[in-house]
Amino acid sequence: MNTDILKAQGLCKSYGNKQVLHNLDLELLPGKIYGLIGRNGAGKTTLLSILTAQNTKDSGTVTYGGEPVWENQKALNQICFSRELQPTLFSGPNNFKLKYYLRSAAIYYPRWDQDYAQRLLNEFKLNPKQKIAQMSKGQMSMVTILLALASRAPLTILDEPAAGLDVVMRERFYQLLLEDFAQSGRTFLVSTHIIEEAASVFENVIILDQGRILENAPTDELIDQFRYISGREDVVDAVCQGLEVLSTHQMGRHKTVAVRGNGIKLQQALQADVDVSPMNLQNVFVALCGHGDEG
Image 1 (cartoon, one colour):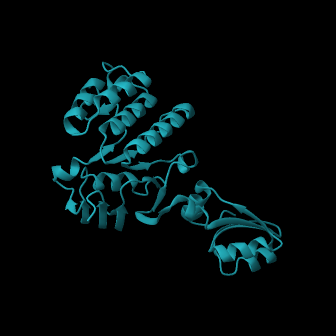
Image 2 (tube, rainbow, N blue to C red):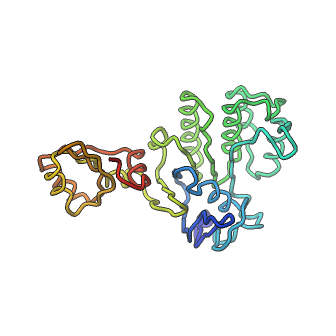
Image 3 (cartoon, rainbow, N blue to C red):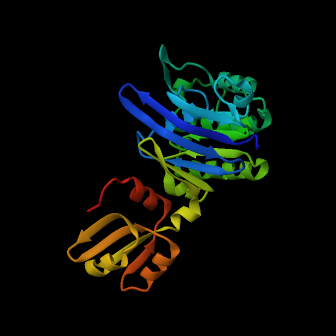
Protein backbone atom coordinates (compact mmCIF):
# COMPACT_ATOMS: atom_id res chain seq x y z
CA MET A 1 0.00 0.00 0.00
CA ASN A 2 1.39 3.40 -0.96
CA THR A 3 1.54 5.60 2.11
CA ASP A 4 1.22 8.81 0.06
CA ILE A 5 -2.30 8.28 -1.32
CA LEU A 6 -5.08 10.56 -0.11
CA LYS A 7 -8.47 8.94 -0.53
CA ALA A 8 -11.95 10.28 0.11
CA GLN A 9 -14.98 8.00 -0.10
CA GLY A 10 -18.66 8.85 0.15
CA LEU A 11 -18.16 12.39 1.41
CA CYS A 12 -21.35 14.25 2.22
CA LYS A 13 -21.57 17.71 3.74
CA SER A 14 -24.50 20.04 4.31
CA TYR A 15 -24.90 23.49 5.77
CA GLY A 16 -28.43 23.69 7.06
CA ASN A 17 -30.74 22.57 4.25
CA LYS A 18 -28.11 23.03 1.56
CA GLN A 19 -26.11 19.94 0.64
CA VAL A 20 -22.67 21.02 -0.54
CA LEU A 21 -20.98 17.67 -1.21
CA HIS A 22 -22.88 14.67 -2.58
CA ASN A 23 -21.43 11.21 -1.88
CA LEU A 24 -18.09 12.34 -3.30
CA ASP A 25 -15.17 10.01 -4.05
CA LEU A 26 -11.65 11.24 -4.78
CA GLU A 27 -8.18 9.72 -4.92
CA LEU A 28 -4.97 11.72 -5.15
CA LEU A 29 -1.95 9.71 -6.26
CA PRO A 30 1.54 10.81 -5.24
CA GLY A 31 3.92 12.76 -7.44
CA LYS A 32 1.38 14.74 -9.47
CA ILE A 33 0.22 18.33 -9.78
CA TYR A 34 -3.57 18.35 -9.63
CA GLY A 35 -5.78 21.28 -10.54
CA LEU A 36 -9.18 21.68 -8.90
CA ILE A 37 -11.64 23.86 -10.81
CA GLY A 38 -15.30 24.61 -10.30
CA ARG A 39 -17.79 27.43 -10.29
CA ASN A 40 -18.41 29.61 -7.24
CA GLY A 41 -20.36 27.56 -4.72
CA ALA A 42 -19.35 24.23 -6.25
CA GLY A 43 -17.90 23.11 -2.92
CA LYS A 44 -14.16 23.44 -3.60
CA THR A 45 -13.10 25.06 -0.34
CA THR A 46 -15.42 22.81 1.67
CA LEU A 47 -13.89 19.76 0.01
CA LEU A 48 -10.33 20.94 0.64
CA SER A 49 -11.02 21.76 4.27
CA ILE A 50 -12.52 18.29 4.85
CA LEU A 51 -9.61 16.55 3.10
CA THR A 52 -7.24 18.32 5.48
CA ALA A 53 -9.32 17.81 8.65
CA GLN A 54 -10.07 21.52 9.02
CA ASN A 55 -13.78 20.91 8.62
CA THR A 56 -16.13 18.14 9.66
CA LYS A 57 -18.03 15.86 7.28
CA ASP A 58 -21.55 14.51 7.66
CA SER A 59 -20.57 11.08 6.37
CA GLY A 60 -17.82 9.31 4.45
CA THR A 61 -14.12 8.77 5.09
CA VAL A 62 -10.85 10.56 4.36
CA THR A 63 -7.59 8.65 4.69
CA TYR A 64 -3.93 9.33 3.98
CA GLY A 65 -1.81 6.23 3.65
CA GLY A 66 -4.78 4.17 4.78
CA GLU A 67 -5.15 6.07 8.07
CA PRO A 68 -7.91 8.59 8.85
CA VAL A 69 -6.80 12.22 8.73
CA TRP A 70 -9.25 13.42 11.39
CA GLU A 71 -7.45 14.01 14.72
CA ASN A 72 -4.48 12.02 13.43
CA GLN A 73 -1.30 14.04 13.74
CA LYS A 74 0.75 11.39 11.99
CA ALA A 75 -1.31 11.86 8.81
CA LEU A 76 -1.66 15.62 9.19
CA ASN A 77 2.13 16.00 9.46
CA GLN A 78 2.25 15.00 5.79
CA ILE A 79 -0.29 17.57 4.63
CA CYS A 80 -0.23 21.34 4.19
CA PHE A 81 -3.42 23.27 3.41
CA SER A 82 -2.49 26.86 2.61
CA ARG A 83 -5.48 29.12 2.15
CA GLU A 84 -6.13 32.82 1.82
CA LEU A 85 -5.30 34.86 4.90
CA GLN A 86 -8.08 36.96 6.38
CA PRO A 87 -7.44 40.67 7.06
CA THR A 88 -10.10 40.61 9.80
CA LEU A 89 -10.82 38.26 12.67
CA PHE A 90 -13.90 37.90 14.87
CA SER A 91 -12.43 40.43 17.27
CA GLY A 92 -11.54 42.99 14.60
CA PRO A 93 -8.53 43.58 12.33
CA ASN A 94 -6.01 40.76 11.98
CA ASN A 95 -3.14 42.45 13.79
CA PHE A 96 -0.94 39.37 13.90
CA LYS A 97 2.41 40.04 12.29
CA LEU A 98 3.72 37.89 9.47
CA LYS A 99 6.61 36.67 11.63
CA TYR A 100 4.03 35.07 13.95
CA TYR A 101 2.66 32.98 11.06
CA LEU A 102 6.17 31.96 10.03
CA ARG A 103 7.10 30.90 13.56
CA SER A 104 3.88 28.92 13.86
CA ALA A 105 4.52 27.21 10.52
CA ALA A 106 8.04 26.25 11.60
CA ILE A 107 6.53 24.51 14.64
CA TYR A 108 3.56 22.93 12.88
CA TYR A 109 5.23 21.55 9.73
CA PRO A 110 7.90 18.93 10.51
CA ARG A 111 9.66 19.50 7.17
CA TRP A 112 9.61 23.30 7.33
CA ASP A 113 12.46 24.77 5.26
CA GLN A 114 13.50 28.02 6.94
CA ASP A 115 16.16 28.84 4.34
CA TYR A 116 13.64 28.51 1.53
CA ALA A 117 11.10 30.56 3.47
CA GLN A 118 13.66 33.33 3.88
CA ARG A 119 14.52 33.28 0.17
CA LEU A 120 10.85 33.63 -0.75
CA LEU A 121 10.40 36.33 1.86
CA ASN A 122 13.18 38.30 0.19
CA GLU A 123 11.97 37.62 -3.35
CA PHE A 124 8.40 38.66 -2.53
CA LYS A 125 9.70 41.72 -0.61
CA LEU A 126 7.56 40.86 2.41
CA ASN A 127 8.19 42.51 5.77
CA PRO A 128 7.98 40.00 8.65
CA LYS A 129 6.97 42.80 11.01
CA GLN A 130 3.97 43.82 8.89
CA LYS A 131 0.52 43.06 10.23
CA ILE A 132 -1.79 40.93 8.08
CA ALA A 133 -4.49 43.63 8.24
CA GLN A 134 -2.08 46.07 6.60
CA MET A 135 -1.22 43.82 3.67
CA SER A 136 -2.60 44.13 0.16
CA LYS A 137 -4.45 41.18 -1.35
CA GLY A 138 -1.40 40.43 -3.46
CA GLN A 139 0.88 40.34 -0.42
CA MET A 140 -1.50 37.97 1.36
CA SER A 141 -1.44 35.69 -1.68
CA MET A 142 2.37 35.71 -1.55
CA VAL A 143 2.25 34.63 2.10
CA THR A 144 -0.09 31.79 1.14
CA ILE A 145 2.40 30.62 -1.48
CA LEU A 146 5.39 31.02 0.83
CA LEU A 147 3.79 28.92 3.56
CA ALA A 148 2.80 26.20 1.11
CA LEU A 149 6.16 25.87 -0.63
CA ALA A 150 8.34 26.20 2.47
CA SER A 151 6.25 23.61 4.34
CA ARG A 152 7.82 20.91 2.15
CA ALA A 153 4.77 18.80 3.01
CA PRO A 154 4.47 15.66 0.82
CA LEU A 155 0.88 16.66 0.02
CA THR A 156 0.51 20.41 -0.40
CA ILE A 157 -2.87 21.98 -1.10
CA LEU A 158 -3.36 25.61 -2.13
CA ASP A 159 -6.76 27.29 -2.30
CA GLU A 160 -6.83 30.15 -4.85
CA PRO A 161 -3.15 31.02 -4.31
CA ALA A 162 -2.94 33.35 -7.31
CA ALA A 163 -6.18 35.25 -6.73
CA GLY A 164 -4.53 38.49 -5.61
CA LEU A 165 -1.49 38.39 -7.88
CA ASP A 166 -0.85 40.34 -11.05
CA VAL A 167 0.03 38.48 -14.23
CA VAL A 168 3.79 38.72 -13.66
CA MET A 169 3.60 37.29 -10.15
CA ARG A 170 1.16 34.59 -11.24
CA GLU A 171 3.70 33.47 -13.83
CA ARG A 172 6.41 33.49 -11.17
CA PHE A 173 4.24 31.40 -8.85
CA TYR A 174 3.80 28.68 -11.47
CA GLN A 175 7.56 28.73 -12.13
CA LEU A 176 8.26 28.23 -8.42
CA LEU A 177 5.68 25.46 -8.27
CA LEU A 178 7.22 23.58 -11.19
CA GLU A 179 10.75 24.08 -9.86
CA ASP A 180 9.76 22.69 -6.47
CA PHE A 181 7.89 19.80 -8.06
CA ALA A 182 10.88 18.90 -10.25
CA GLN A 183 13.13 18.90 -7.21
CA SER A 184 10.90 17.21 -4.63
CA GLY A 185 8.27 15.26 -6.57
CA ARG A 186 5.73 16.03 -3.87
CA THR A 187 2.02 16.12 -4.63
CA PHE A 188 0.29 19.45 -5.21
CA LEU A 189 -3.42 20.20 -5.41
CA VAL A 190 -4.18 23.75 -6.58
CA SER A 191 -7.66 25.22 -6.61
CA THR A 192 -8.05 28.16 -8.98
CA HIS A 193 -10.48 30.25 -11.01
CA ILE A 194 -7.74 31.39 -13.39
CA ILE A 195 -7.99 28.27 -15.50
CA GLU A 196 -6.16 28.82 -18.75
CA GLU A 197 -2.98 30.23 -17.20
CA ALA A 198 -2.68 27.17 -14.98
CA ALA A 199 -3.76 24.53 -17.50
CA SER A 200 -0.25 23.73 -18.71
CA VAL A 201 0.90 23.20 -15.11
CA PHE A 202 -1.80 20.70 -14.17
CA GLU A 203 -0.92 17.10 -14.92
CA ASN A 204 -4.39 16.05 -13.78
CA VAL A 205 -7.50 18.17 -13.56
CA ILE A 206 -10.41 17.66 -11.19
CA ILE A 207 -13.68 19.33 -12.17
CA LEU A 208 -16.14 19.84 -9.32
CA ASP A 209 -19.70 20.79 -10.15
CA GLN A 210 -22.51 21.24 -7.64
CA GLY A 211 -20.77 19.10 -5.06
CA ARG A 212 -19.96 16.24 -7.42
CA ILE A 213 -16.76 15.38 -9.26
CA LEU A 214 -17.42 15.38 -12.99
CA GLU A 215 -13.86 14.58 -14.05
CA ASN A 216 -10.57 13.50 -12.53
CA ALA A 217 -8.31 12.82 -15.49
CA PRO A 218 -5.00 13.68 -17.16
CA THR A 219 -5.44 17.21 -18.48
CA ASP A 220 -4.30 16.62 -22.07
CA GLU A 221 -6.33 13.41 -22.43
CA LEU A 222 -9.46 15.16 -21.19
CA ILE A 223 -9.08 18.19 -23.48
CA ASP A 224 -8.48 15.95 -26.50
CA GLN A 225 -12.02 14.56 -26.22
CA PHE A 226 -13.64 17.94 -26.97
CA ARG A 227 -14.11 20.01 -30.13
CA TYR A 228 -16.14 22.88 -31.52
CA ILE A 229 -17.98 21.96 -34.71
CA SER A 230 -19.58 24.69 -36.80
CA GLY A 231 -21.26 24.95 -40.17
CA ARG A 232 -24.66 24.63 -41.83
CA GLU A 233 -27.22 23.40 -39.33
CA ASP A 234 -28.24 20.19 -41.12
CA VAL A 235 -24.63 19.17 -41.80
CA VAL A 236 -23.59 19.85 -38.18
CA ASP A 237 -26.54 17.81 -36.90
CA ALA A 238 -25.56 14.90 -39.12
CA VAL A 239 -21.91 15.06 -38.08
CA CYS A 240 -22.84 15.14 -34.39
CA GLN A 241 -24.68 11.82 -34.48
CA GLY A 242 -22.94 9.65 -31.92
CA LEU A 243 -21.21 12.59 -30.23
CA GLU A 244 -22.24 14.15 -26.91
CA VAL A 245 -23.45 17.69 -27.61
CA LEU A 246 -22.73 19.91 -24.62
CA SER A 247 -23.77 23.33 -25.87
CA THR A 248 -25.11 24.98 -29.01
CA HIS A 249 -25.05 28.44 -30.51
CA GLN A 250 -27.14 29.19 -33.57
CA MET A 251 -27.40 32.18 -35.89
CA GLY A 252 -29.85 31.57 -38.72
CA ARG A 253 -28.86 28.35 -40.47
CA HIS A 254 -25.32 28.45 -39.06
CA LYS A 255 -24.75 26.36 -35.98
CA THR A 256 -21.82 25.91 -33.60
CA VAL A 257 -21.76 23.11 -31.06
CA ALA A 258 -19.36 21.97 -28.38
CA VAL A 259 -19.07 18.21 -28.49
CA ARG A 260 -17.37 15.36 -26.70
CA GLY A 261 -16.53 12.05 -28.29
CA ASN A 262 -13.93 9.44 -29.04
CA GLY A 263 -11.11 9.81 -31.52
CA ILE A 264 -12.82 7.95 -34.37
CA LYS A 265 -15.97 10.08 -34.28
CA LEU A 266 -13.96 13.27 -34.11
CA GLN A 267 -11.80 12.17 -37.05
CA GLN A 268 -14.95 11.53 -39.08
CA ALA A 269 -16.09 15.08 -38.34
CA LEU A 270 -12.87 16.41 -39.86
CA GLN A 271 -13.83 14.81 -43.18
CA ALA A 272 -17.23 16.52 -43.33
CA ASP A 273 -18.10 19.96 -44.68
CA VAL A 274 -17.82 21.63 -41.27
CA ASP A 275 -15.22 23.59 -39.33
CA VAL A 276 -13.67 21.65 -36.45
CA SER A 277 -11.57 23.50 -33.89
CA PRO A 278 -9.92 22.45 -30.62
CA MET A 279 -11.00 23.54 -27.16
CA ASN A 280 -8.79 24.60 -24.29
CA LEU A 281 -9.34 23.65 -20.66
CA GLN A 282 -11.40 26.76 -19.97
CA ASN A 283 -13.66 25.98 -22.95
CA VAL A 284 -14.06 22.40 -21.70
CA PHE A 285 -14.92 23.63 -18.21
CA VAL A 286 -17.58 26.03 -19.53
CA ALA A 287 -19.05 23.31 -21.74
CA LEU A 288 -19.28 20.83 -18.87
CA CYS A 289 -20.43 23.23 -16.16
CA GLY A 290 -22.41 25.82 -18.13
CA HIS A 291 -25.68 23.95 -17.52
CA GLY A 292 -27.47 24.86 -20.68
CA ASP A 293 -27.12 25.99 -24.28
CA GLU A 294 -25.26 29.15 -25.02
CA GLY A 295 -27.74 30.35 -27.55
